[in-house]
Amino acid sequence: MQLYLIRHAQSENNVIMDDHIKDYQDSKGLQLYESRRFADAPLSSKGRKQAGRLGRFLAGAYLSEEAEGDQDRFHFNDFKFTHILVSPMVRTLDTIKPFIEQVDIQPVVWEEIYEQ
Image (cartoon, rainbow, N blue to C red; front, side, top):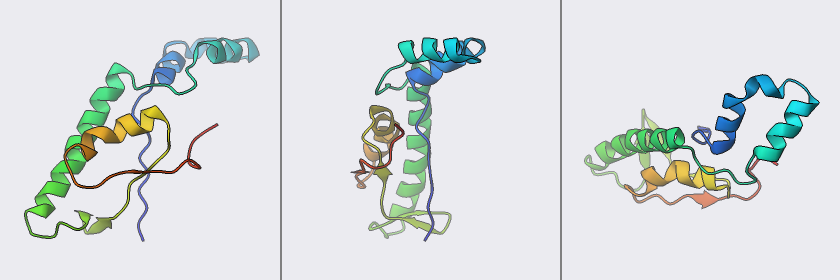
């Protein structure tokens, strides 16, 4: 079995942290970050572009294998992808969306795999 982990694309919370990293070096900075962050952050503009690139990359590999007649599994570099597990967070669903819109694999939302 091979397991691939793909982190979500850049979220709005990542932007908040990146834009103000110098402010978060102490407890006051952490309070500032916590007051600005989203509970379920959407993807940023950059994150949507990253998700699109990921989707094109994965779909390109998937569709090239499909042309060879093996449509029941996603093959990439001799590894077989049979499942896509995502957390219920909007950023993870939006990260995989460009891929699943192009292929016949649907993600399985797994509620236990998200950061709290």
